[in-house]
Length: 267
Image (tube, rainbow, N blue to C red; front, side, top):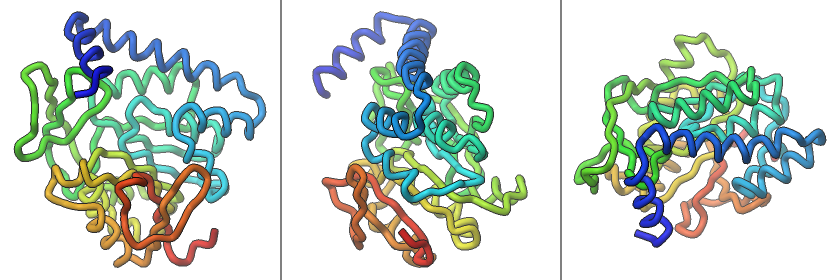
């Protein structure tokens, strides 16, 4: 464990859950407030990308006037906030299963009047079921689906969550379009996309996904399994580094972020 994580863990052990969550909210509220003052769209895109993830600057270059967006693993909402601001006419369905993180996320949505963001307290997977997630005590906004031999400490928090599939969600809500999916689920990517195959095949959304072997191996899969699934559906894979994309056939340990787009998409 890194020194900063040890310090964070010590601080969290000295505070109660309510105090921790309040500090988290105040932190995100302060950071997002700065960017809400931007009037110029391009300045906002550049500023927020530099603050959170440089690769975000690529999204408006490849995604034009989306109607429907899905944010899988919304956390406290940085992507939903960003996408809401640059695509105010879109509808954003944001999935976050952790109760504590979800509550912070809802406050962010209300505080910044993100009227086109719809928070959904569920996880996505390959089937509809109940799952246990756990949150390391030293990092309470990060949650993992429990896996075999999970290295949990007695201080870690666990919670049972509802899991649905993207295919079921799309069908239940009668969605005829889905333009973009952002997915960051700490290694659970293959399960999420197994439950989205019909949607991917029919609606062909652009997918922005973080894939790292150190996470996927916890669930007995590897990054290439994700690429194989998409390839079978007619998708091409591009590695993402800042505002550049490069076509690739493999996931690199050095690059965690990937763009997946149907071969009919032109960039």
